[in-house]
Length: 195
Image (tube, rainbow, N blue to C red; front, side, top):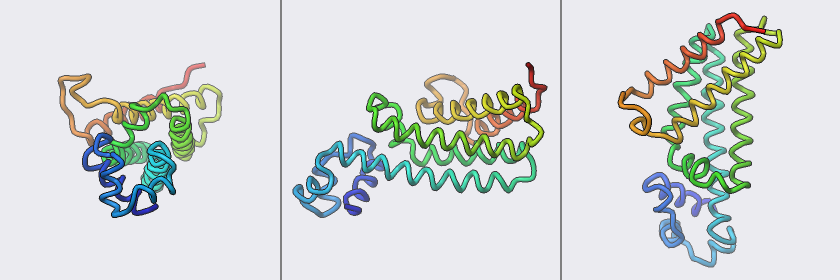
């Protein structure tokens, strides 16, 4: 089973979803069609297992990003670490993320799997911000943190869904974009919350 998932992962990262065909997975894994069907039932079962695997890998990588961010001395450095690290994770896994989150967003099972990860990431980001802003306890302040988290999630999905040339004539490096997003979020958080 792991050999087939390894083969599928390699094919996916090399050539995108169009490279992920049954015959190629079987050949690369050096297994049989019968073995494939016995373990996954069909191609959809295989793709579900691939989705679980990619989400688990991304979860581990994002846990590391947030762990490093929590060690930063101030909010600005921490949020920059989050954006820079998260964008690097997205870049490494963009093909499967796009396939599952955008190309197959109509699939309720895969959407729910992705939503669980997204909500978990939002919770961790929320907690991280609160670590640096312990006095943000009013309703307005909590709402401001929630909106900052939503901006972060939106920025991540923009990186998954769109190439730069799809929405702008200005080309910027991933690091510059991450830093600018972090600065926007920090400026928003440092502004006085409204009622």
